[in-house]
Length: 269
Length: 259
Image (cartoon, rainbow over all chains, first blue to last red; front, side, top):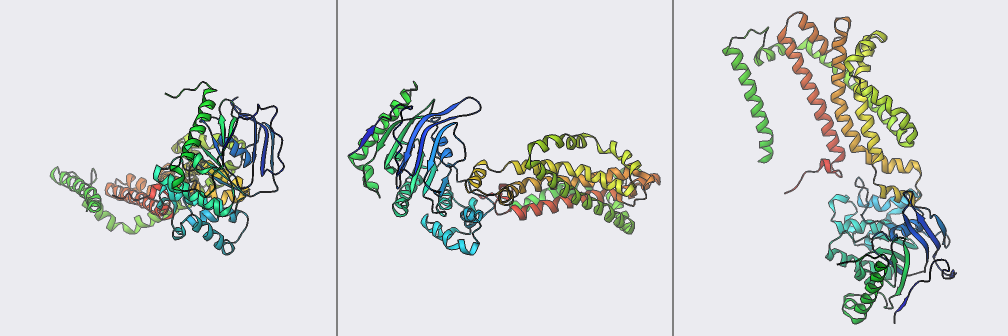
């Protein structure tokens, strides 16, 4: 049912698969202060995947997202993206413009591309409906709860109908109840939109629940140490959390994560 | 209830202070050319209203002209600073040097080089300019870096980033600068007029104070002083209200706390 593979050592990376949406080869990234964030990282992202990047803090998982989004340039290696795939980015914080209404926040990506307000209106309304915030188009961010702000942030990413949605620990700052609801909503959305999602998290349970594939990373330098497939059809629901298969995958993923941390002699007491 | 107390309490304390002043002047029989009672000041305001009000208009007009020039100059320079750190490095020392040199010390020099009305305006401009420049520059640089990333991701032009991100993000800082600059412009105008003294053909409130001093007309000095204070308070309240209207919907500084 599942498949666990330890990634091959960096220099002899897996061959480039032609059907990947994004393909990272031998990626290295070091910062000006000498920190090596990533070294020899190989990763293929396929269409329709829900890929979680899981790892301890400092393993460079957020850096991978920034590199894919071209918000940073790699120090070495190549990133190939098929065509000019539209990207969406969701940050850990909602990152809304507090001076703009919910509508204008979601309208922003289209506005930047020169789409008129009248033309954009149905698309903005559709995006707001997808996250269940149709009634709040004219509210301002500070009038919303943390979970609702995050929904606006997701709607803003969806309004461009992205082929690839990059999410950087989007629910980490939310309470457990809100996070569970947003997890379920995200599963439902992906099943409907069939978009590819790369999701950065440090929660084993969240990643197993959401993902079709989990890539476990280790730190210093950041690299891929395990690639786990979760063979359970989407959409998943509450009963998935209760089944033995889920528990088994969580155990497996935890073990891979522990191994990744052990590689750095990090001990959790 | 709470709100009523918020207004009533300071008003009551202020009134008590005035009554105390009135009482002491009456009890000790202090002559008005030493210390006029509040009632005497009020009476002078009434009798000399024509002269004083005319002077008030002159001073307020200079203040607003200086403030307007400072806003245009300060924002323009802040925008220039935001374009390149090199420009900021090159010009910021000048702005700081102007700011830390006391205006009283510059005024006599300006009065030699410029006509007295231009000199007064320049002094008021110089003191109002710096807080507006430094606040606006800080505001332009303090846009949420994740939002900056988002604008980059969607390949927004520099212009779009300025209009939709940096300017709105700078607005609360700018308004704070204007609130400080408004009060300082008034002080700058007064200081320059005093420095100009009898040499100035000016007829602003500070000139009235100098003139009344020569004539030992102490009640009128107090009356002019009262008008300056009131003008300063009104200018501050005006910009506080403006800032509240502009930021009410989104900024924490204008938030009324519930509960």
